[in-house]
Length: 272
Ligand code: HH2
Image 1: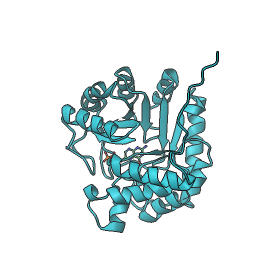
Image 2 (image 1 turned 45 degrees about the vertical axis):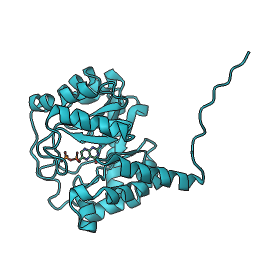
Image 3 (image 1 turned 90 degrees about the vertical axis):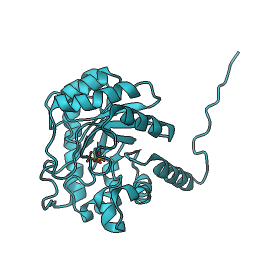
Image 4 (image 1 turned 30 degrees about the horizontal axis):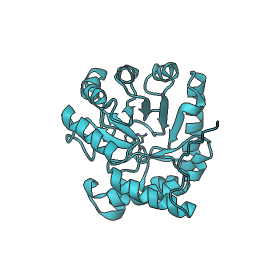
């Protein structure tokens, strides 16, 4: 999953793709580099951020979703607002990525159910404005797992097919460096919930804490964390830098399987 943030203030690419043409070009580049999903967001969720209106979010993302429809990847709308998701789905998006796990807008689960699209439900402690103020857990993995299990049950109760739901531990959303590392080290416990797991480590500050590097220099660190997430069972890797993580995941996949290509090419058999 490649990321395009159509925002002035995202922590690593804020302001770079605020112009719709630049955002569409970036989305197309991510697809050419191998992204299966392009995640388009119009509201930063960086620590301390306040949020924007649905009107402003739509003004930012809609031309980008329209411009990327038909570009060869599933378009994901990164929003917690039903009005934004609805317009994006009408414009060609096919996936809803909600960092509030259907807690932000009571209408969003019903919309996802009605449209029959895939969605990602993510764990966050508190809100972006407050989440990094001394986050605490009894056992971060057990707490996040229990939350995701409850949100999955909520989504299903609202009519979303279980097979349509992916789960995300929310790396960096109300977590210390140690919390993030423990979640990644024990990701198999989240995978045990039985739904595909999405991880978003890309360029995040815990990688900067470890390597001393600025956000734009964290592609290798991102790839390393994603390889370990893959080994522990993650299925979707949300990244700003597709080539580095894709190479790393391909080599890791081949190494874990002991062969390449891992899937045998599809063959057509004709019976007469
Ligand atoms: N992280 C961010 C935003 N959306 N969605 C999922 N499912 N998982 C994540 O880890 C995740 C997410 C934050 O990263 P980014 O979009 O680069 O920054 P910002 O929120 O500042 O726009």
